[in-house]
Image 1 (tube, helix red, strand yellow):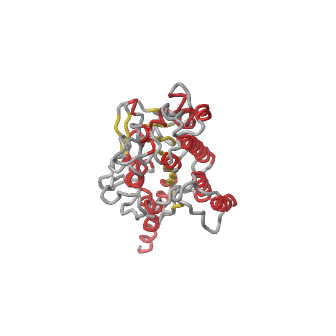
Image 2 (cartoon, helix red, strand yellow):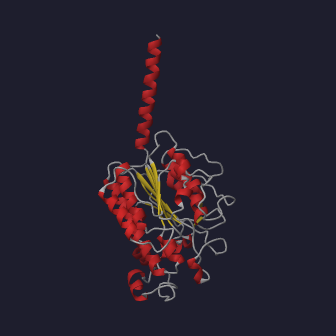
Image 3 (cartoon, rainbow, N blue to C red):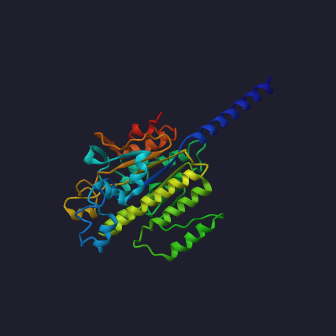
Length: 367
């Protein structure tokens, strides 16, 4: 009798484990992406007429106009970010075009990077503790850390960033989430040829900035890691748009946005060719803050004193995401909803106190 009870308990535990793993395998994978400081104005209306021919901010105005200027906003945005406007609109949702009534805002009052990323990744603004870009370990737990500590997800979460503060934002030591950011190389005993080459190339190509590497390295490190390890939740933080804007280089800012659009396209195509991700992956894309518009020179800046720098945007597409295209309904969303949305898409409950609620239109799968 005792042996029978032990066997029944063992069988129940085995079935629970199998069902748990099956549920995890069938749940969508999520790729969370941010484009640092990309204004909603460029995303939704393309190149700015007041900047694209302004020689204060553009070296070759003739070439930049040929590349990105069109008379209609619809054509300008397609020229700037063709994957967003020719592909994502047909399979996802784009929120944040304030001209159409769709608003997305930060809830933190800092309106710069670390507070913005903390809000996105934790779902809670923390102006008391996160009020600078200093390299301090985040006291708050991110959706990356929380997911990594759920049964079945240990070692299935990873982060990649161009800015060298991301190991602190994610709190890599406490969270256990591997973060490749700044000028870090790929590590491990199983590096493939591409990773070895990326490590060599990163040392040989200087970045224009002391704390931010070029986005191509962040992108390709992430892709190679995904090919080998197949994480269920990946965070990729591109940074060039913000840094070129701070430099006052509108030409490079637009080119960086255009290049990142191409990288996101490459990620999507990879997931559609890889058996682990194919037809079971959701992309959620946003930005950590906006930029100024008036006076004109404030396009280079952000922060509490910069008008409208708290205005942002959110894009989602992939497995089960209802196709809404460019949202033109009057709505108000917030960046603090992103963490809970990521968790909900993966089928997990996000119970962080005071966190924003999941975005209903994203987590409500199409029938």
